[in-house]
Every structure is written in structure tokens, then in C-alpha cells.
Image 1 (tube, rainbow, N blue to C red):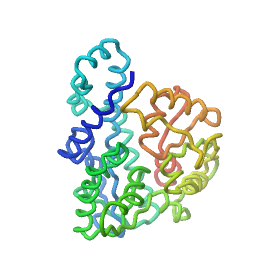
Image 2: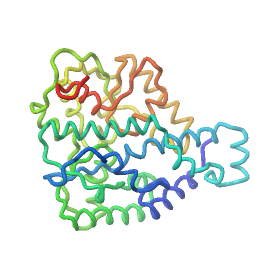
Image 3: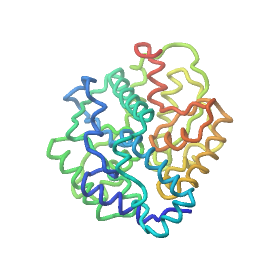
Amino acid sequence: MVLDARDVISMIKSNMEEKGLPLPIDKSVIYEWSKGLDLPKSGDYLLYTGGLYQLLPYIESLVNQLEKVEKSKAGGLALRFAKKVMKIVDVSKLVSKPDKEVKEYADKVLKSITILLKEAGISFYYDPELDGYSGALLYDMGLVKSFKRHAENVYRLLNEKGVKRVITIDPHTTHMLRSVYPKVVPGYNLEVKSYLELLAERTDSLRFRGGSAGPVVIHDPCLYARFENVLEEPRKLLSAAGYEVREPRRSGKLTYCCGGPVESLAPTLSKKIASNRIEELKEYASTVATLCPICFANLHRVAPSNVRVVDISILLVERLETHGS
């Protein structure tokens, strides 16, 4: 059974209008990870995380609940009578019980990215009050007016604080701020760079340990590969860190889906797509490098125990002379 898209879209829209986030969680979730890290408060680039990594543990809990509803006969029957899927999915549980393991992973990714930026000597700063969600889901689900309103609010805040350049850390936020916002926000003027692009420009500044780190197979996220042309940078960084980068049959601009686009509407179908992809990837290496939190969530969910799905930032930090194990 495919869940009613109108229910999921309605939930996302109402949460965005109330919280500025697609799920009913407090905005502090976006910046809690930064506490105690002593991040710079001034610099050339604002680190704008977009919140996708921070939302991962809540998305994981939501998808697990939706999948149970989709599969169960009782859930199907309830859907027929309830008409609204969110009436039988206890969203409040998502807020109180985010997936602990995934939260630790997301925090580790965010911390790793700041370590790499510092190690490369990139002048950046982080301001919790300026960080937020890009509105990517509103755009993806065709809520054009809501997305435009949200994008204008995001830019207004950044512009009022004099922000001219931002660093993004995931393909969805990069695509929104670099390619979509300019089309919907009047007077938009912001330089947007993925942290991978900035790091690749300063590869020589990153002090990696010598020797081979073994093979990794890279999974290109669709937005980086097909829209933002972030293809060579991750390969250059992994190679510099000593990894043997292996290309799957479907890579680069012809990369294959991770299942993410349908995970909230058809969790079972999403899992089948992800399973097909992980079966292909594991033929090349037992370590799969991801560049996107959504790709990680979907591939990690179906990966067998002998396959490690891991964000590129963690792989790179593991090879730093100063931080690697």
C-alpha cells in the first residue's frame, strides 16, 4: 500500500509554517550539536548546515513508523477508516524518541566537517541563530508558494546580518541555496559553496597519514551529480586521504537512486530501491562512501552487517594525522 501523499504533504506544510522545520521538533535540534565545540564566531564564510543531518534521527523514526503502518493489515484497515495517516502515526513519539544511534552518527558527521574546515585553514564561523532548514521538502513536493515564502524568510535573515558567503554541507541545501533560491527570491545575492568544494581547493593543507586506507566505493547523490556538478571533489579528497576509489557501474551523472525521494510515501518501495543499490555497491567494496544524509539513511537501513555505509567526512577525518585513529 502506498500512503496518501496528501497526508504527508499536509503534515510537512503545517510544521513548516509553525516551526520552520518539516517535523514537529524544537529548532534547538538544529544547533545543539555545536555546543562545546568552540566554533569560530567570525570569519569569511557562514557555516549553514541546513539541518538535514540533525533531522536524520527523527526522519528515521518517522519512516520506521510509516513502514509499520504500510505493511500491517491493521494499519491498512485503520487508514481506510481514519483517512488520515497521521491520525494513526503518533508523531509525538518522534519528538521524544529520536533514534539514538543515528543522532550520535549525525553529530559525528557535523563535528567531522568542522574539523576538516579548521584543518584546511578555511575561514568560517557558526551562528546558531542563523542556521535553519532550507525548505527543500516544500520545493520537492510542489508547495511553491510555501517554499517561496520560506526561502524569502531565510534570505532576509541572512541578508540582515550581512552574510555574503555560506558553506553548505549536504546536496539538498546546496541545491536550494545555490540554484533554486536565486529563481524565487528577489535580489538574491549569496555565494554558496559546498564544504567539499572548498576542501578540494585546499587538499594540500590537509595532513593525511601515509599508506593505503583500502578501497571505498562512492555513491553519488543525484543533486550533486546532476545539478551541482560536485563530482571530482569527493574523489580527489578520498584519493588524497589514501583511499582507493572504486566506481560502481552507475556513478557520476548516471548515478542510481538511494530510495530517498519516496521514503515518506512508500517506505517499502523505498527500501527495495535502496536494497538494489546496496547490492550493486557492495560488489565493488565493503565500505560505501555517502555524501548526503538522505542517501546514508536509506542505504544504511538495508546494508548487511559486513558492509559499512559511512559519510565521507568521517572517512576523511579518520585519515588525518591529527585526528585519525
